[in-house]
Length: 120
Image (cartoon, rainbow, N blue to C red):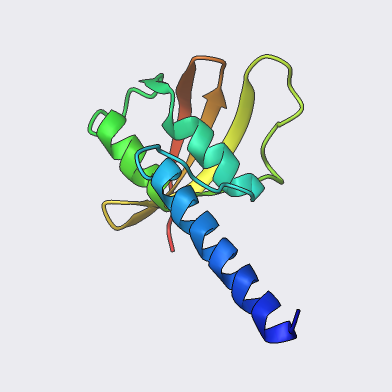
């Protein structure tokens, strides 16, 4: 069999496989979160949210999820070795103000422990 025919058969099979994969995964909420930052943010965004912070009442669940869209995790300050509720430090922006959050990631919910406004 000539090399050109082999390449043609390969490309046809590859194309059919891509189409089938697109059809199968079309309706599902799939994501490719391979980096540690993306996995933590994805995990936090799927859980219910509660706050222990009293002085920032306008920072609610909607604000928290908007903050998570562009937040980054500071793993050097985070305590990721706990068995129960891991503590993460998140950096990002809320209402055009740089803030950092300290959150406790438990099995079924995320608790906001501290909200710090940063001065640029």
